[in-house]
Image (cartoon, rainbow, N blue to C red):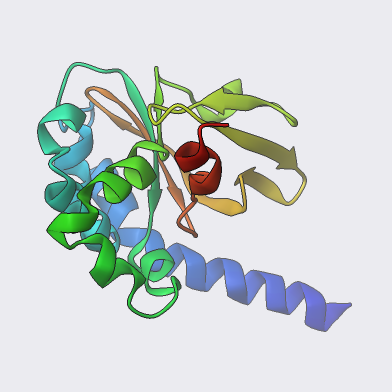
Length: 176
């Protein structure tokens, strides 16, 4: 049991260190002064997401009035995709698919973690719904765990997640 507690404490400590750039950036401001894109650009752990948003042509949209709720995958989340997937998505001919995947990570409105309940669903900008699970172990959006919640921006809120979540592309392409 002591080993289990030590393991949890160690894991949590490593997680806090990994997420410290985002926390530090948030703490620099007494009030919210950055939009969602600016916040992501200032956060090294989200640099791959920023590159994908730029490649998809979504920068201006995510700098808009909103409000938006963004489930932001970390660099490690993108690295966990099958080899070659990210590179392929960033190619011009796959822009439509990249847009679909990225807009699946965005929900209209500002949804804070306190607004969530187990079993909820939320319609994404992409048009499909994400499933939300809330338990003693944390919050999950589809199969991704929320690593850091409620990072406020001038035009919404960012929840950092540990996986890239994917809409059911088969359903989208077959018209069902």
